[in-house]
Amino acid sequence: MQSARPTRIVSWVPTAILAGAFGVSLLLLSGCVQVGDRLTGVDVARGRPTTCIKQCNDSFKLAYDNEQKAHAEAKALCDAIDCAKLPQGDQQACIAQRQACQQAEEARHNAEAGVWHAVRPAV
Image (tube, rainbow, N blue to C red; front, top):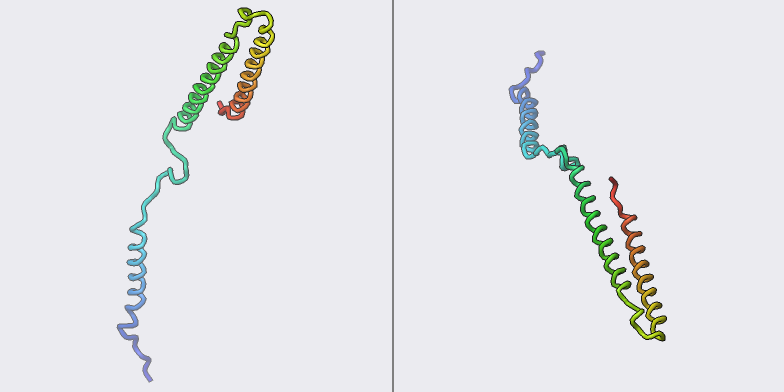
């Protein structure tokens, strides 16, 4: 008995399957695009982190200076009350109101300063 010879159909099937798999993978992978470093949140551009920190510090300084200026103006308004020009009987009430104004402004400023110290950016 003679052994059967492999037919031509059987001999090209593995090659066709391999070529098909290669073609499909080529089509699937051709749509991929290499992503940059921004995907991970890391930017390799120099000066970026220091620029961000500088902007944050500048914004903080501006807001802090504005609060100090507002505090000074409010204190000046409280101190502008001249109780000496009032009649003797009204002077005590005027002084008490001026002190209450100063205490209220000091409490407001201290509360605001507590917020500023809590959010102070890293230098």
